[in-house]
Length: 165
Image (cartoon, rainbow, N blue to C red; front, top):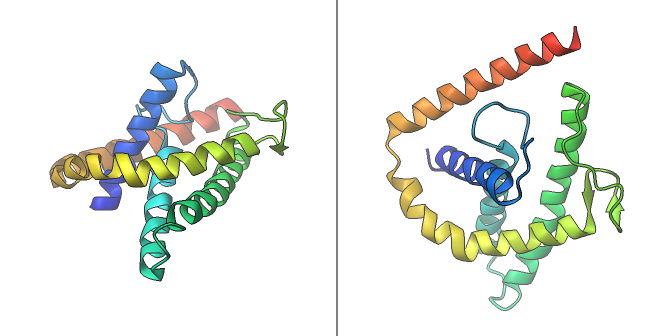
């Protein structure tokens, strides 16, 4: 339940940040108030964090290694996500072709740096604060969110079928 709740909390948080802070009207492919790439990204950061803790890396090197590994893996996730969205839905939600040091149109060095910094913020600031909330989310709320998310996915794919016809 922890990872599912983490996914939803950060998917919703990512959606709020994109729509209300950055005023990105077209945040994601789903209808609901979530942008799953952020939830997946944070879960990936947590898995990286847990793996690095098991390896017992020097405490001084740990933030740097977390930064580099997260930047690479999250940029890869963003790149793959961009390709999949374009192939499945025929839409492009982000395009970094005009940015200096772009890596194709779906990621760039600038975004890699942002993902690396974000991983540090997640591990050292957001995760400790939000863990208390995430662990207290009742199971029935998680079940409702999963149900709504599945419904959202179904409607998204139905909408996709209608728009491709």
